[in-house]
Amino acid sequence: MRVANQYFRTIWVDDENLPDVHIIDQRFLPHQFKVEIISTYKQMAIAIKEMHLRGAGLIGVAGAFGVYLAYRDALTSNQTVNFVQKAISEILSTRPTAVNLKWAIGIVASKTDGNLTLEEKTRIALETAKRLADSDAENCRLIGENGLPLIEAISRNKKGDAVNILTHCNAGWLAFTDYGSALSPIYLAHRKGIRVHVWVDETRPRNQGAALTAWELLNEGVPHTLIADNTGGHLMQNGMVDLVITGADRIAANGDTANKIGTYLKALAAHDNGIPFYVAAPSSTFDFSLDSGMGKIPIEERAANEVRYVSGLYNGHLVDVLICPDNTPAVNYGFDVTPARLIAGFITEKGIVNPNSYAISNLLH
Ligand code: MRU
Image (cartoon, protein in one colour):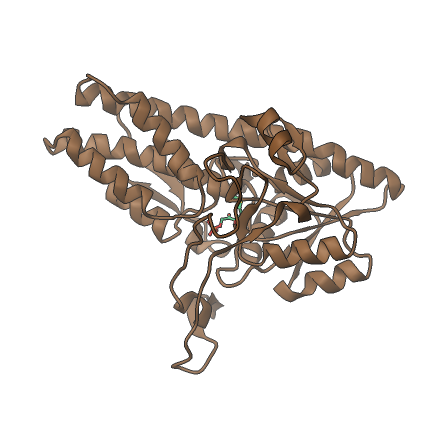
């Protein structure tokens, strides 16, 4: 993905000799573009937990690089493999909902298992993390190709009028290593000259829609409009939405889907208005250990102050502003679960799959 004409991924290493990890620090977007250099597993755990980076796919790849850094820390400070085991538990505990973290860490852990020196484990962990970063980008590219026909069909029906797509949160390239999930088919359609317009939910409380999705779409030159979180239902009732595409943080075997808080309400409104509601996600987001999602997918609860305050730019400075009486209690659930029955299909790197256990297992398991 390009930022000011320079190609970027969201996470990368610069050279082959046990390098540090670089990330785009999303806390400052859209107002400032900053890169953070991460040198220890502790720094990576903080970056994941405190959302310097975020998004299911990227969290997974960052976790994998975190394991590499843990081995490197162990090597440089004469620790044992036990140190790495503790580090892995710490990284795993940073964000509970997106299953990609557990998935990616599990892959690095299994590749580095066995009778190897710490040097070998460190090198293998780095190679594995880099490979996971590459495959995350490639899977998202394929999600774009597989989702494109949905947009093309609506465009044909509308005789070339703009296809209005509503999305929630940020499931663009910032949430993965490149391309994105929900936004990937939109970018591809736009590049192919299909007229698209995106309704961008602000996505309170962290405003990933307003801050990140709007910034990505602006960079890509895709027509879009920011809306308050509560606007989607009105737009749908008035024929102003043709298609909803969101991302996902964890999908149970039956298709129940956890995604950013508020997704369920958009799915209900789409269902009530006969608008197709698709979820775009790589197969690493499916959790086959859960037969269904409701009450089983862990829902992250974050700090109440994320609800009580809003962050933004004021007189050139990034500030937090209190939006309620000083002592108002607040609760901050990060995700909700959309039942499979409200979902038209999953756009994956392997194709579009119906939201039922049989179809999901046939295509992905
Ligand atoms: O809390 P976040 O910003 O890490 O939320 C995860 C997400 O990016 C969204 O839920 C998104 O729609 C899922 S796609 C990776």
